[in-house]
Length: 297
Ligand code: NAD
Image 1 (tube, helix red, strand yellow):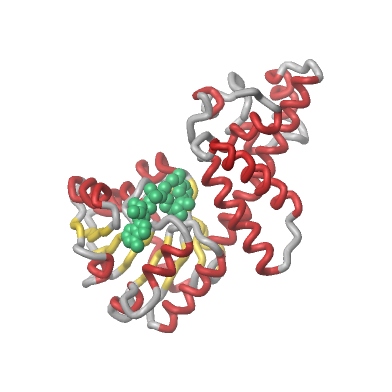
Image 2 (tube, rainbow, N blue to C red):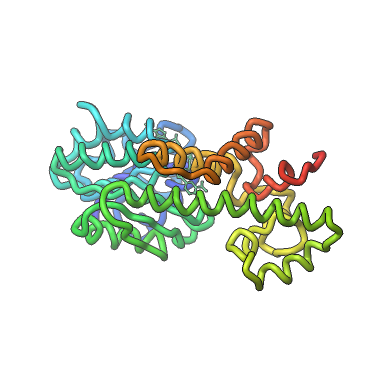
């Protein structure tokens, strides 16, 4: 049993922290939201009085925060977690953030004598609750070996993607593929329908042919084709369009930073910006077919 600090007890963080506590670890958590702290307390997690409280006596500290600016604010500076923690404390940032911030924070952690891992996840709230998350991990071999037993409690598929920031790089590259392919599937199924092709027939053909892809098979945007698809639930997420939008913007910021050309990623980001700005951020990302197909509602 170890003492583990946990900062950010929101939709993802709370169930992850609960799984660590269920495994017998002493989890000390904190969140700026009083409601999140209350829910954590009710779930058997010790709630610290302030963010810095989570590092006291902790062998490892996990953070699960909204975006890069929150991670910078929490980790860096004289009052930040890195400054307050005992030398050698393992830091694991599971937030999905920009690669540049992740690498800056890794460098600051190394400067302060702490091993660090970036470990963004996929699998959503359901994966967090069931302990079935996928972790994409960046950092040294030694830090990865230390963090692995904790990932194995919260997740099922754990991949060491390389050095500092490579977990974030893997996450945004993967989600850029997903966003682009969802748009491609939406275009093809909308075109097929206008050409008089039954979407179920197109699915039967394409899902077994060269056009097949994960988005088509698992999250098909047309209702009535794939049982698990959000399209069958009025596009209730699932994986919200706002989240896809965030990840596509992160991919474009990263591409800009390193001078990579990602023309289809840029187009996908622009289409999700239009879709989210029209008030659809709370719908599943597969609902982009409404924009592509010109649906009236
Ligand atoms: P959330 O908004 O529910 O939780 C974030 C929590 O961080 C909030 O409770 C907020 O109060 C807290 N917080 C913010 N600043 C803080 C600070 N300075 N100190 C303490 N707490 C602070 O978000 P979420 O859905 O749990 O997502 C967290 C991260 O995981 C995001 O980066 C998101 O992109 C990523 N992610 C989410 C999902 C998903 O399905 N929800 C899936 C994969 C990855």
